[in-house]
Amino acid sequence: MAKLKLKTHSGAKRRFRVNAQGKIVRRKSHINNARRKKRRAVKAEFHTMQAVHRSYRQRLRRLLPYGGK
Image (cartoon, rainbow, N blue to C red):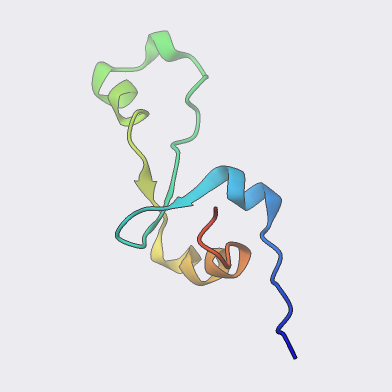
């Protein structure tokens, strides 16, 4: 008997990705708010993906059972 497929959380698959090292990464927030007032270094951080904090990893693995693809 075949095992049931697990459903991927549709909100999580849009917000998170699993990179080549297996880490779950996210985009920084507040990217569209008041860009003119922010320093250049702060705006440069928006281009990179941030690793998710380790306290959220287990919860996100459950929402992304197949690596978020």
